[in-house]
Image (cartoon, helix red, strand yellow):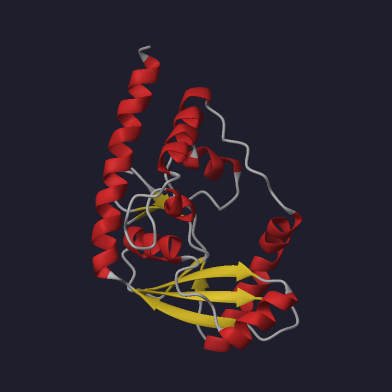
Length: 201
């Protein structure tokens, strides 16, 4: 794994992510079962557009998403206190020197762990207490992060200020990761071919 020195959400971090498939969008490439996603072509167009224009695609940012960014440091501290462990903040992570795809986990834990934080409204947090958290809701992002970082497990944390957090641990799913790696490499190949085609049209 290669870790960029640029902090998350800095200009340099955004520049690095330009036209790069990232774990938070892996669901656009592959389904939770490992099949090709119906949104694959649209995501290819999106990243090709970023490459050609030199600027990021405009993604709608909701007020909830903005709150999630602001609450993330508090959630990370609470996780550290609950588990009596340090969470290391990192920038963009690449699997290897090829830098074909990346992930920006919310933290790395020791030598084997990773943390992903999801901000929740009070009623969503209550629902998760009651009926649980669907296993595959963030599956591609979590497994993608584990694939890229080489970590063995990821704690997914549902955080709502003023309420007890919900933390679920996910282990590496080797069968899914094999399918994910294949589809990611196929996607990157198709993206490179398409960009070359557009540049030479």
